[in-house]
Figure (cartoon, rainbow, N blue to C red):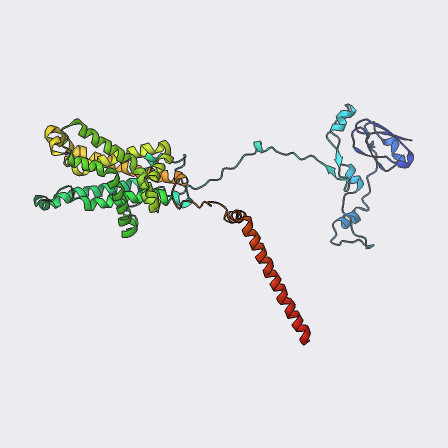
Length: 456
């Protein structure tokens, strides 16, 4: 019997016929070399060989041939056999674990090494790092200079609020250009003063210049709403007379006339000696301001005259929800301030100015007119931008004609239902006619067959 110890101090008792082979320790699962018969006396208690100090040096006689075989360029040796450079059993047996001797069988079983069943290589565990421990790299992303180039439908929460967005350089420059147009309109009244002395109303003279601003506000709604852009367009946009001036000007004048026509008529008709006159003027102006955003969205952006029905215009306002009211208030304040900054005290009736003479000095002072002009232009651009955003957000909910295709119902089932509803007598007559037609066809075919047989 061969008796020797494993490194875990497990004692093997094997037959002598197993000398020189390999066994697996049932305790630590380590592959152990069974010593030769002559090596039993040199085995230490821990399973290792005892080295003698006076042992002669080992011979390296066959080392050169072994190295030549391993590092040769040939794939076959001198006998014609393919050179196998895989690890031998002796080299595999050198693989070990970090287990220390001692401990129970269960502790050794938990740390037992695992070997590949085909190659015999030691399978070492791979440490897998958790995803939470990995440092995720931050990829820098460039911010778009123009929001509409990336298809931004709404102002995102990461961008500035709209009242700050209007103060950005590009938008502020557009508002400044609109202010210059307003100054030119005021100067035109002074240049055309002889026409005023000839009897022309000073309220009509600046209108040709103001039409540029009116068309510009229509372009603002179209750019923000229909074109999905997030910046103010230039004055006269692309300088196209049909698309950038006369088209939006015609639609804007129609909307302003419908909404504020009653208020303008009452301003020129009432003498304002009664308190109810001023109340009616305020009611007409407020009603027009509430109606204006829905009418602008319908006229400028719906592209269909069938949507001008009053119920559809009111439905547009209802679909916008509570966000509709601040837009209407911005339009009302902006138009009132713009009219004041353009005409000054001339917008008030003469009897009002006679009753309150201090209004003439206040309404005509430049410290009041120019701040009112800048604030009015800011509010009007804000209202136009918000009107376009309302269209973007709720356009799918508007009850417009041509907005979407909806099938009324299946076509052919209705025809089948009509056929089923026919009277029974009519159906019987149709069957008899069909049977008669089939009989005549069969008779004609039989006649043709007889003629062929006769001539054949």
